[in-house]
Image (cartoon, rainbow, N blue to C red; front, side, top):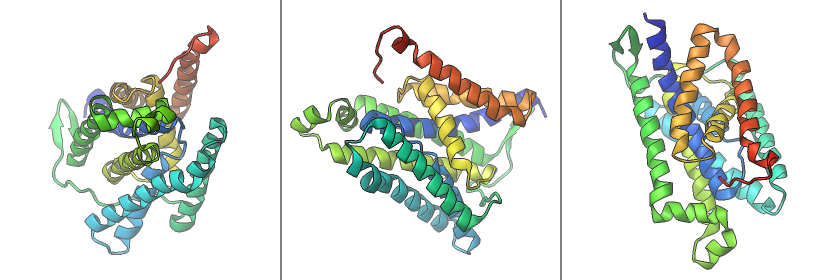
Length: 288
């Protein structure tokens, strides 16, 4: 096995997941101006629910469908019942509320599933595709194709369609958007629903290849946020930043060791924060 080739393959798969999560974060931020730190919990909820339901004897398709619905209910319920009634609160307070929601989900998941990692069968079975000394499973190919394809579709939807521009207008100036006939509340809940669906799809496609546990959500939120921040919260740019982040993390794990991945990713987060704050330091401003 060629270590470099296999690392690239691994990076493509994780990069697709980071793109899923990053564009969901971007969508919610660009629509509601809130950084949703509970976004990665849609990944964990879907994975744990699907594993438990499949383990209880439910057919895999039904288990995955029900798990996605549970994740969507969490994403939209967070907005409708927790954030919307407090819409006039400071943005920093709302971000802390989403962080609290993430820890509540962690507590619920550990009560339901315990601390052991869980998984479920792959949807795409068959021998892996081998090339250049590496091997990619069919599930991984589906993850890469769907990950970048769906994320690109969402980016194009935001940038080039009337409905997508209405979502962005709802964040840029909600009062003016309402005067122009945009249903701001519907736009925001749609953004949370799409973001939740993207996180759920990431879980459905990646978790059969690895595993999930109660604390996976915040780790995924971190990586999705780094991808989103590198792109400048751009729905199109996150496609490339997510891919680059996945490849970078895979190379760190391959050549330095898996124990270095989280510290290196935190360093990247700090560097990104310093880079994005450069305009503030010099008296400038930058809108996402």
